[in-house]
Length: 338
Image (cartoon, rainbow, N blue to C red; front, side, top):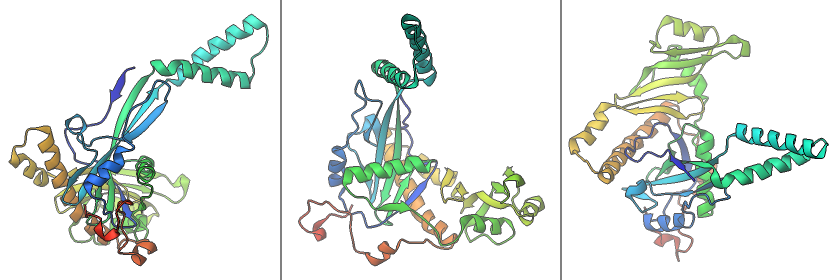
């Protein structure tokens, strides 16, 4: 069985972000957290499995621990393996089998029997199928109560959160929300309203008309303060994507669902990495992670403030002292802060 591995170990700079608010502070010590994840460690597909998932070392082949902790930031990695059985192959084998059976028995093969034959073909192919392995990285910011998932897909991010809940028994986390419509706010900015301090337009946006027949405008490498862009706003289009620069330190494309795509850390940030001259993979990973999380820890609060403030869950406001801690600890007060 051949495996294709798509995980990247050499760099830890996130490219896309799905941001979650923890419902309670996360107080599991890294050692305890690692032990809990170990119960659901990735073991790969068996001969007859179609898919398998579990937790893997963030450092890949360079590490053994299932968490990578640094100053209150805890990196984890969800690994998934999937068997690759092309649908076209299954269809062709099924067609050949149906034709042969109908010719041998002089009868028509109906739907229920075809479904059974299809299942038999897939079972027969499973032990010989190629597999694809992918990694999903995330980290818990225990200082600011965020879960940060490196994913362009909200669905894949939800899969990681669901896996955490299955492993830990409970993990209250919800996508971060703001108090107003992000699309309306981005539209006002493009219409001429001043951007908050520290933020500038990038060179990209996407505008849509409320009428499905009204069209979609995608602007790239464009001055977003140009008259033609504002004319689209005046004609009723609204923003669903907007490229932003923050303090000349990072850039991203902000989407109307508050997901962050094409995150890029500018040279001023990566100079700190270059200056250290770190060559070995472990040191480089740790350095990248430390620089990135500290930068994002400053960026997220300023972004949320610029967007009008976070709409915090009521439960979080009501139970500010609750913790996600080791259920085996004698007293909550004894749980070690990560």
